[in-house]
Image (cartoon, rainbow over all chains, first blue to last red; front, side):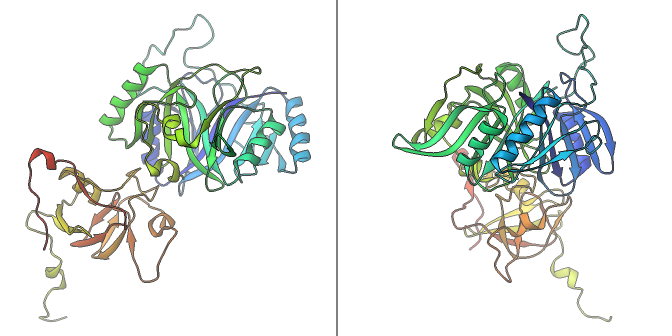
Length: 304
Length: 129
């Protein structure tokens, strides 16, 4: 069985027109479908129908979708989720626009996580036959290629880590613990494929979103993203900077409703034989912002 | 209706269309233009207050609205405005999204202070007494 990647993120936005302008013109996503105050978006290098869904009303995360390789895997995951004692229900084709049957799990952190293997194939902007490396017709704004990962908050990181490990076969790439002689888990960065992380979580309020991230090509693309943020007066949380944890490069910023987003590049390669890295709380500032070694208190407390 | 003084005169905008916003506890007074939020006006005049998303979603800038009225041109969530530690009779506001509709007094949180990031450039500031 295998979970492939973060497939979609459903979020609430206070003003749909403002949000569309941000995700379409600043980030460069394309609107694929729109109905009843909900907009479905995809990035140019994503093949599936949508990856970010915006609904008008409030702020914050509604649900996450992770794509699974096949239907048999879904059945196996269902068995494991039930064995763990977590809540889950079958999700029917049509519950989500263009998404087939699947499984809707309530995580121990109270987040809704949907698993599916079937979603309408739309194709990337460059196609599969002798493709160009990027869309010749151009992209808007930053031109984000794809969704990468999400970071959520939970009252009990150890329980969520155990769930993701036992029920979904995620592995921890990096863990943040209290100290050398204090193994209490503060946060965990977990992968299902070979990225440094596909889902991460830190201690905090249940059910909340810290951020979701887009992958972009490299440090140079990251600085270009920073240019676009300034042109469009997008509030920056921090960056451009290097993460200690995941070794990635980052700019954190906010969408027009105050949901935190990230553009992320670099990082390393993991895999089934990857050995978990440990960070201690006395080095947390370096772990999160390796460049500046400073942490704004709001970075960890502001969630939507 | 009669010849009573026009209540609006008391809260009339300044000739240049600005309202005055006073920020406690530092008692710094700034002019806020009609097309500016309080945070926008502070930034324009070289100050930084505590804020994060500048979009009314995170609540980091939350301040007590001591006096005056503000309006929000885009929807903000009431739970974000009020915050977790709501006290009866106390009005809060989100300066990052608040457009003054009168002269306004806000009070920052205990550990929040205005920082004058342009002070090093030798500009002097008006302070209320």
